[in-house]
Amino acid sequence: MDFSVSEKMQTIIGMINEFVDKELIPMEAEYLSHDFLEMLPVIREKQEMVKKMELWAPNFPAELGGMGLSLLEHGLVSEALGRSPLGHFTFWCQAPDAGNVEILHMFGNDEQKETYLKPLIQGKIRSCFSMTEVDMPGSNPVMLETTAVKDGDDYVINGHKWYTTAADGAEFAIVMAVTNPEAHTYLQASMIIVPTKTPGFNLVRNIPVMGHSGSDYASHAEILYQSCRVPQKNLLGPEGHGFAIAQERLGPGRIHHCMRWLGICKRAFDLMCYRANERVIHPDGSTLGSRQIVRQWIADSAAEIEAARLMTLNAAWQIDNVGAKAARDHISMIKYLVANTMNRVVDRALQVHGGLGMTDDTVLAYFFRHERAARIYDGADEVHKMSLAKRILKTYEGKVVK
Image 1 (tube, one colour):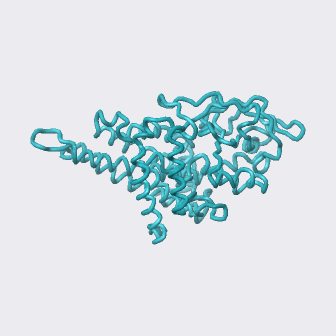
Image 2 (cartoon, rainbow, N blue to C red):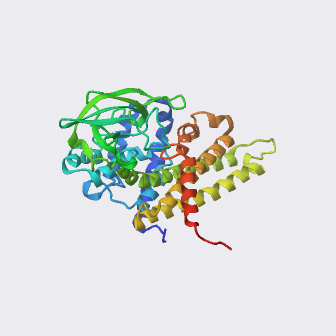
Image 3 (cartoon, rainbow, N blue to C red):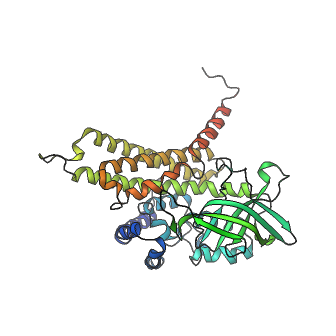
């Protein structure tokens, strides 16, 4: 495995880091104190700058207007963009659109690609992914109550979803619903494209997360589907293959998340080290950085970030070279390991900042309240650990170890 960074990628990462430092980080104070929708015109201006730099949509297919980077290459980009909450959206590689592009590209028909995929990659529209349900455990995704029943040439969808990220202002949703209740458990659900203006698509509210409801892209919605009628041609991929398609989406998606979290780690670590050196805590001029416990936090954070980063790059390399199925153990490992690493590093950085860390005068409080969910979404820590251990133990069945 060769994780060396090509000259091309070094140039790209250098350009992105410079853009984040000069254009995005200076916007963060306003972003943290204003509604996302208020900030959107300024963000759009930055997006036009990104397009002129030919850095738009780094992970999307080149023939459709993206940069066509490999998963490993995009991982490096995602790490650089993760240093700012504005990074991924400004460069147009944000979740859930990134995952929706991937499955539309792989499973969409020509009409779906023309209607939804093309304008999505161009940044003309946004999308959302509607899977998590209010009354069903997200830890067991085969348990779904939302149904899509055939009626003539249509599907009629009924169900109650929430944490449908970025539904506010989205043009369409990709909805996971049960279409084949009598089939095998993993062949019951399908993915269906639902334009958000369809009667029966009801955005109940943007859910307050740690006290913040958000707006537009920066929100998580509760959706009620009430006799929501869409044509059967809106089916994405084969009927009953919703879970198989979801797996194609989630594997690379976890790399995207983990590398973004590593970008957050880098930003939090930089802030922690700067604060440790600058914060004078004694008349003799000694700083926080002179204290043994702070030095331990810095050393532990440096080692943990490096270990998490190498594991994530390895998982990305595995997906690029042997496929997501063969790499699933590595994907499970990084999902919970990187999420926990990020939470620890952010917590330490916040602690070093003291009362300042609790305010929005730095980005740390934003990371603290919005990234705690990393240990829950896309598979809770406990589920990944249980599944990984089960697969590992299976390889030992029938073996004699001396």
